[in-house]
Structures are given as C-alpha cells and as structure tokens.
Length: 144
Image 1 (cartoon, rainbow, N blue to C red):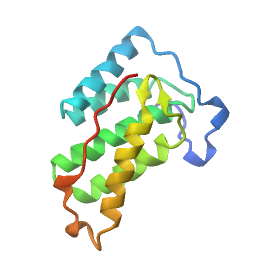
Image 2 (cartoon, helix red, strand yellow):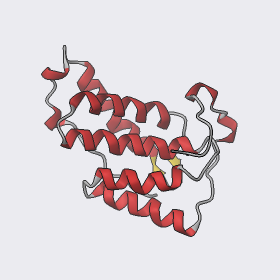
Image 3 (cartoon, rainbow, N blue to C red):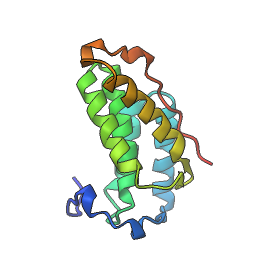
C-alpha cells in the first residue's frame, strides 16, 4: 500500500507530468520490470514496478501504475481470467493516455496502440466468451 493518499485520475495535474528522477535502485527495478515483462513474467514485472510506484507522490507515478495494470492484464491472460484482462487493459489505457509518446524512455505510443487494438477486439464481440484471447498481441516494452 502506498503511503501517499489516493487520488482519482480526474485530479491529475497535466502540467506536473514531467519525468521524475529514479534513484539507482529504482532504475534497476524499472529495468528489471521491463526485462521481466518482455519475457512473460508479468507478476514479477508488476512487483518490480510497484517498488517505484510506492515511493513517488507525484502525479507522474500514474505512468508506473499504467505499466503495473498492463502487467496485471497479461498475468490474468495467462491465468485465463478474461474479465480481469479487459478490466486491467482499460485501466492501463486510462493511465497511459495522459503521457507523451516517450516517457521515462519508454515508447508509450506503441503500448497504447497494442492496448487499443486489444480493446477493439474485445469490444467487437457480443461477450467475453466470444473473444479469442489467444489472438491478443502482447506488446514488447522498448526503451528509446
């Protein structure tokens, strides 16, 4: 649990969404999370990024939370909890939409494109049972 008060997305101050400085330890967790995500170890990636999220009070931490939600979506995919996939993809989309195409060295636009494609596929079906979740693309997180 974060020591900082919860803030709804509607209260994000877009003018403060500047890249925050990661400590050397946080940078290692950040990069570790990327490596874990890109090798399909989504729960472990979530844990690595949560280390950073818990230590930052600024609104830009919603970016880290977006990555955490993305990892949670694919963790749920692996567990075949399809409702969770849809919920976490929407939460990731909601958070990542606030950020520029490149944030903390991440190609955010590429992530948003994969999320949008996945949600379009999910929303085009009459029910979650009709979605072929095996066809959803899992993005690769790239540092620019």
